[in-house]
Image (cartoon, rainbow, N blue to C red; front, side, top):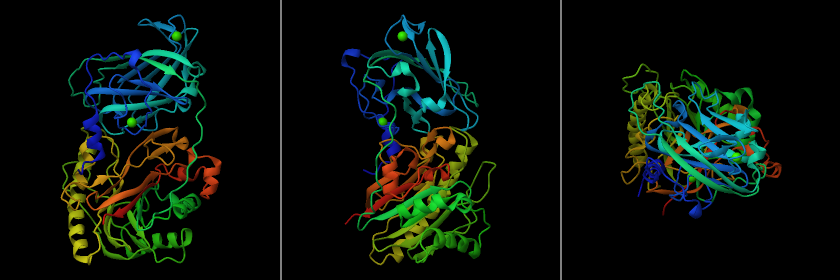
Length: 488
Ligand SMILES: [Ca+2]
Ligand SMILES: [Ca+2]
């Protein structure tokens, strides 16, 4: 029963035929969640719409790293299903076109849109389109969403037609993969009347009785020290039992280095709590809690590595006792950058194996110390998961109480069913998902789980939570929160 969500996603991803034809007569309008899982898509449907967005499913015949390949995708949209308007191509009158291009850095746009009004091409700004694609890692099927209000021609009610072309784009940097056939997916969509994208009304769920709230947050190189207020507001509102932190401080380890972090939490979160911070030689990672720490993890963790990186693994560990459980917990920050089959991806595998080994030791210690309390291993952090799918489960394999891997909690953005944990208006409206919290589903269940993006919430929602709109933009990553309750 204990399968990672990612594996479930891969199992559900369909293998595309060389040519799939959508039957317009049977085309449904499924409600699409931009979560990287394609289970809600009927087999014959590759394009859909609601009042705010257009959605596309992109099924590839093999594992692909969509965000790092050169020109893997072209979507031609005949917004009025009228060959007489737009630019003529393949029997369509194309009014709008979306394409992708390889980017050297996440700061560059990787989606490009062109509108054809009276046949003349005009670029449409990335910020207006606000494309969201999931998953962020390599996969065999992706979901893509774009805003309809990016273009007046997409706002009317009626029929649209078009083609999704998944191109043989083997100009990846290593250039080693073989050629496959291009995939062409014609589609028709019924468009309901469009409306501008609206803010979302939502509230933070209170921590349920008997549950343990875990927060993971990459804070962007000590941002809470330079600009404490947004972090202070969010952390007070969320009020977790365990903070798993990344990118706060660069060591070296010393007791004073840990006391600095404890002082920040006394000053900016709660002066009356007895804060403990666990840091290490690995840059930026920490665990902070107001519950008793029974044992600390290693001050320095090394990976056996074949890559050129040999810095200490960014892993902080501790065994924490809450009123409801004993938790061997880790805060991890895997190597950034690189995609499928790169040295960075190899380094992530190396780091994951070292983390798994030390987590195994901490779990055995926790079982000795538990004194009858449930033992709930938790590993959260920034997995930088943009390459091979199996990177994700490497550090959690075999760590559940039944010997299976830990499970990654499904954490949609609060108030939505979408999944991203990085980016937003301060980052050019690019959004990807990098931050995960793994838990033992043989010993606990998830009560609530969410990512907090204050930018998308209504003013009334923010006022209820005593938050400001830009609070979650204090860092490039968003806070990820999971409430766990031990099974009886
Ligand atoms: Ca989905
Ligand atoms: Ca047209």
